[in-house]
Image (cartoon, rainbow, N blue to C red; front, top):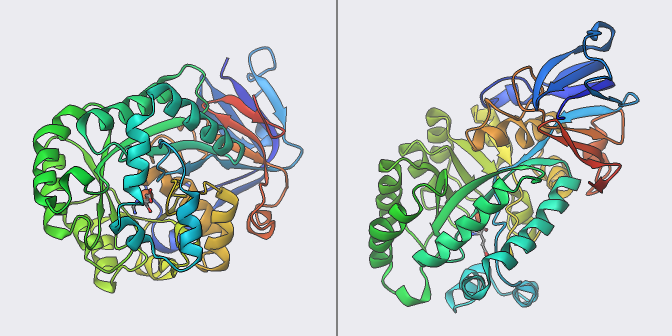
Length: 418
Ligand code: NIG
Ligand code: FE
């Protein structure tokens, strides 16, 4: 029974069925003494607790007394590399000693090292490992996650990764919603070293048709010495032509025009954007492309943070996500993402909440389905330990979540994944 009613709650939520842009990101709707009802997994009533309809009785609904604590929409982590073989702690140490992310990649480490490990690992073992990370996400209040392929880089291994994602998404007891992204254009694999154009040709000819029905989004690492603008445009256009929605890893390491390309192709989101140009910001606002910022990556790479304020002041829709991956950012911490956004990117806590809920959903083209607490949306929400949402950044890097509800099902209670 996915029927649940939460009473005596402070309901805090952005509003709308599309991304909140610019200063609208700072507007949260607050019901101080509210109640919310989920029927068959979908929000059927939300309002003042004094008006709670008596039809929702404990015969048919599990009633939870929130004790005045905050209820928020479930968090949406709209950018992760959840499926991967092995780990790369050695590279993390090299970087601490002064190596750069790109120099490690250029000498055959980095993404290629995870590709080697992922190709040889079985689908079952990749899935078990990913499920462990999913359970950690759920504890932090994530109810929707995006997962990318991109550590196969040959048709068979990319298909294996996407099948793992599909298997996890369809598991009957799965605790959250999983959206899958094809990222065959994550790096040029060693077999194609020096032949980037031929790898792009092969992806267009062979991989795209093979993965067409296995992922909703297609993504690419548009970067100097990886896939530059012309190859990125060619690849993304081919993906778009067969029905993929687009995302880009854009302007992460250098300013290359990834944001402009994302806008030109009407990508749903452009991600990273540490080195975005002012023209790129303007183009993204015009195109309505969501700016997905990943502060944990900037932090872990000791790079400057993306210009969140510039985006918001220009009227953009900003989303925040973790970028969990075994290389540039081995962290999926929602609490630390919140802290970095507020402390270093000067986002307000209200903007940060919108970026991790409604705008995260918009970055996955799911703003009509999740990301806010409104009648008709999925029953994805969390109860904090506190009665004040401002505790989220103040309790720096620590988890404020007590209970998590996904499609009306309690999936984590008193911090125990159930
Ligand atoms: O989003 N920059 C490219 N891709 C990932 C890192 C992947 C890896 O290092 O394994 C990113 O930062
Ligand atoms: Fe990434």
